[in-house]
Amino acid sequence: MSETIAVETNIAAPVGRVWSAYTTPSDIMRWNAASDDWHTTKSTVDLRVGGEFTSRMEAKDGSFGFDFAGTYTRIVPEKLIEFSFGERSCAVEFLAGPGDVTVRVTFEPETENPVEMQRHGWQAILNNFKKHVEARGA
Image (tube, rainbow, N blue to C red):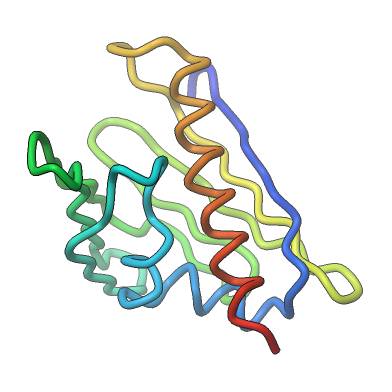
């Protein structure tokens, strides 16, 4: 792996709820957007090594959309998800503490957009994830 970008957030929820919200298609469709003018219209998850996932991300005005897809390469339940997407890889760590979970996403950047733009976009999605999980309550 070459240069990587890491983003993280701390979520006040039990690790089981955090893991479930990260890996359940109906949840993913609620939080997987970097801004309010985007949304995820379809999500599939086959959570096993060699399984695939897809998320259809679209601008709400219909002007643009793309599929974010990949293949799971390593899964440690409630601790780690690693996947490849295209020629790049990503690791999502779930670091459980007393009453909270730090979710850290480390990924290889692409070459078309500036690193800071990519960091900001992935952090914004993770921030939406935090809001989604914490809003669900206990």
